Length: 348
Ligand SMILES: NC(=O)c1ccc[n+]([C@@H]2O[C@H](COP(=O)([O-])OP(=O)(O)OC[C@H]3O[C@@H](n4cnc5c(N)ncnc54)[C@H](O)[C@@H]3O)[C@@H](O)[C@H]2O)c1
Image (cartoon, rainbow, N blue to C red; front, side, top):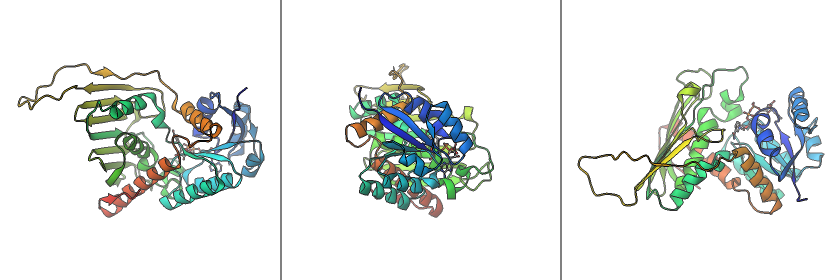
């Protein structure tokens, strides 16, 4: 039998219980759930029972169990402490996004993992969505021509909830931008490459909590492409279609609902072999476009599969520390822009 990576989980009661354990760790042929820990011991015991794992009573107990890797899914402000503990115990780490609250924290996180010689992955799992990969292949194959413009949107209705860590920047690092806009920026960076500079507005339009409920970002890529990201906590779920639009000199790729936690949305590519000459009538042909609908892959399963295989093959995970660190740098630059009203250059 091939070796399976033995997993522990810190912060078992949230996304870990909803998605990553049932859809990822339990389904992967390279992974096995051994032990879970959550500060809420009742929840932890229930998760352990649900997935036939051991309920660890402390992080030390979790780290002393027979595990190779830890999935950290605690609130963002706890990531640095939890990464340090896991790295000191020489466990490989898949850390949920964001790596930390700040670039400074993220750099410490990367450093302790390097020093401990453990792999560090980041939970930006939307890269694994098969339609997103198919769009990437079209772009890499030059089918879109020269990248011109992108738009990515992820919003949800998130009313005030007592004690919700995302609603306080000291616990979550920010609001809709940090939480959801980060996925959008990450996808656009996967498509268009390095970002040269950003500008951003944030606001609280509907909710009165400390984190922003609204964010719009403009991105200027090194290859000349432009993009926008919009992320709101104050739009009803059904109103936001989480669109992804990618335009190039030879066409576009337009998607609805592919950005998110589910398996598939709609994606259509409108591509032209040869760009026509200037048409003063600006005539549009009624082409149906090419439906991009590969067999869906569960993004949490793909994430756990890749990280487990990375350990087994002694190679970096696809969404490695650099992906996490770059994401953090861009988000921090966005907040700086929102605060100062300036365009901020990104230092990679
Ligand atoms: N990639 C994704 O699809 C995705 C989706 C949701 C959340 N996330 C990320 O996952 C992380 C957790 O978010 P969530 O939605 O699960 O939050 P959540 O609040 O729903 O769950 C967090 C869990 O951590 C536990 N916890 C809190 N403090 C802890 C501590 N000190 N030690 C151990 N456990 C502790 C809580 O009791 C809770 O069970 C965040 O970093 C978030 O950004 C990622």
